Amino acid sequence: MRNKTLSLAVSMTVALLMLSACTAETPPAALDIDQIIEGTTEYQRSLLEDGKVTSAEYEKALLARRDCVASTGAVPGDIYQIGNNEQTFDFEITAPTEADMEAIQANADKCLLEYFDDVGSVWAFQSLLSPAERKELQPLVVDCLADAGVNVPADADVKRMSEELAPLGHLSEDVEACVTKYAAFFAIPPQATAPHAGGNP
Image 1 (cartoon, helix red, strand yellow):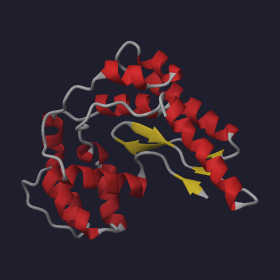
Image 2: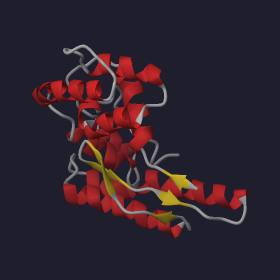
Image 3: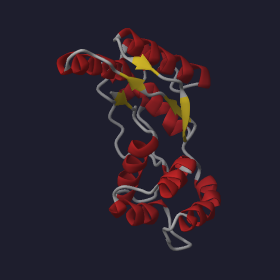
């Protein structure tokens, strides 16, 4: 059994497109760091207490999650880039029964909430493009989609592109490659600042 984390490959593509399609393109709102810190786990609180996440802290949280996943009996794969300056890994589960597999899966999922979820969210927010950076990428994304067989208006913003792509359902490899290549362009600010339920399940 293979599990993938928050935002990667196909799952990342679909999530980004559906979220973007429902959201107006507005300047990023500030995260409520104090609220996130209050609701996170002790491990992540120690990394977030100064209100930001460094690359070293991000890597530390990701490796802690990976070690935790390994301790559940799952086998984590290599860490790789998924766009918007984020990284993740896949993991595989082999078990004698379905019940055993589900138990390992549940414990591996807890590792995300315990060690990485809120740190990763703050890091992703810090990595969002500025309006100027997004504007610079926009024609490249339009051209990439056109080469993949999806024509969107030359002035299409994230919301319009997402509206064009979301109804396609399963995306072709070429379209998915465009969205993955320009994941930072499709990454949008969160609309709610409530913390993940990492520390208080």
